[in-house]
Image (cartoon, rainbow, N blue to C red):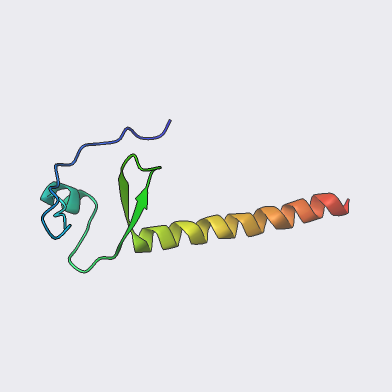
Length: 79
């Protein structure tokens, strides 16, 4: 079962369209000034922010697994 979402504070959008990520969220997620965040939408129901380096690491892990699976499938198909 995936972890339950956790409310880490409230962010307010200012007149320039900027938000401040609450201190509790920055601390818990180890966010620092200058970190790059990717912004995703969930079919217009909300925003999802993720550290670019975390997404990069995750996609590399997935790619590595896919390569392993493809090699295993190839072996099975050769038999």
